[in-house]
Length: 86
Length: 201
Image (tube, rainbow over all chains, first blue to last red):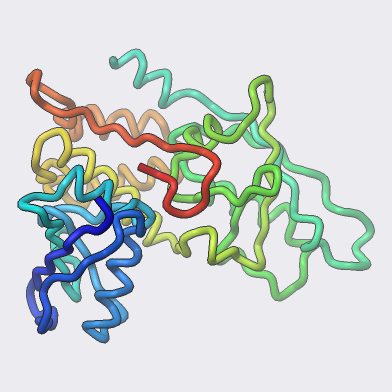
C-alpha cells in the first residue's frame, strides 16, 4: 500500500470542501492530513477525529491508521472548528 | 492483571537532571549542581520541569521562561507525549540505575518534537485513552462520559504524581476499558527506537 484515500467529513460549522477526498502517502504522519486540511479550509484551528471519537497521535503513519481504522478502502476523517467529541 | 497494573502505577524511575551546558549564563560561577528526582512511570516528562526551573533559574538568562521545556538523553530529544516509564524503557541502557537526563528551556527542537502546552498534553493523554477505549470496545463513550470532575481528577492525579488518586479514578470509572470477549482487541502501541518522527506504529 503506497497511498491512502482520506475521506473528509465536515462537522458542525466547519467549511465544506470542494474535494472531499485526497490521497496521502501511507508513510506520511497524520500531521500531514492535519496540515493539508488547514491549508484547504484556511482555518488554523481545526479538530480532527477518526471514527467520530478520537484524534490519533499526529506522528502516527497514515498507513498504520488505515489498517487499524480504515474501511471500504478509505480512512474517514471528521473535522470541526470546535471540539466535537471531547 | 491488577497486580501488574498496581506495580506499573507505583514504580518509580530515578532521574538525575542537569541543565543544558549552553543555557548556563556565561559568567555564572559554575554550572548548577544536578537535581535528583524519583518520578512515577505513569507521568509525563514536562511535569519535572517546574522543579527543575526553580533549581536552575539562577544560572539561566533572565529572559528564559519555563514555557516549553524539553528533555534529552544522550543527545536524543525525548518525546513528551509518551509516558515517562515508556521513554525510560525505550532509551535507558540496561544497568542504568539512575537515568541521566538534560533539561533545556530554550531552542525547542520543532523539527523533532511536537510543540506543546499544558492543554495539548492533556488533550494528547485523553485522546490516547479514547483511542484505547475505541480499540477495546469499538466506542469511546466510556471516556467521553467521564464527566468533568472525574476528568479533572484523573488529569491532576497524573500531573501531581498522585498514584492513589489515579488508581481510584481508573478502577472506578475506567475499569471497562479491557477486553471482555475473546474477539475483543487489546489496545497495544508498539514503539520502535532508531527513527525520528513517524517511527511509531
